[in-house]
Length: 87
Image 1 (cartoon, rainbow, N blue to C red):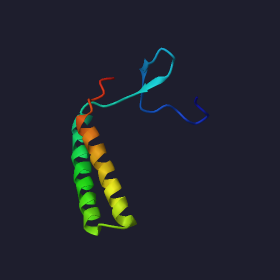
Image 2: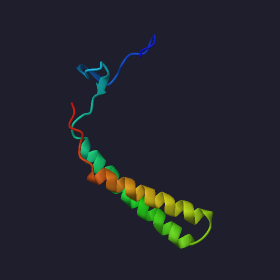
Image 3: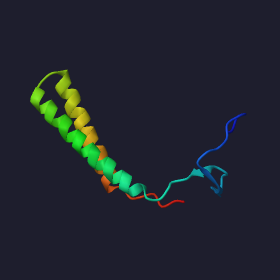
Image 4: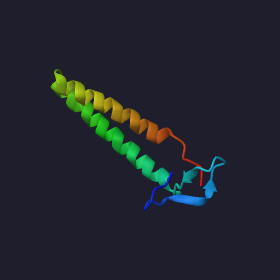
């Protein structure tokens, strides 16, 4: 639903689904950016796990380890997912 003064941006007008909803555009070449983000998340996650291991106990260590595991999981997901093939 559009309101006054708001227009659709980033939508290819010819790429509408059967129900009339618009499909967002995805530029080609984003695979390299996803790989870079995945490697960056792996590095940040391993650093957070190391700092959590150094603290060993307490709430800060739990937060560091939890965020480290989450960052590593997101990094692996970014590295292993397939590129979106839609227009």
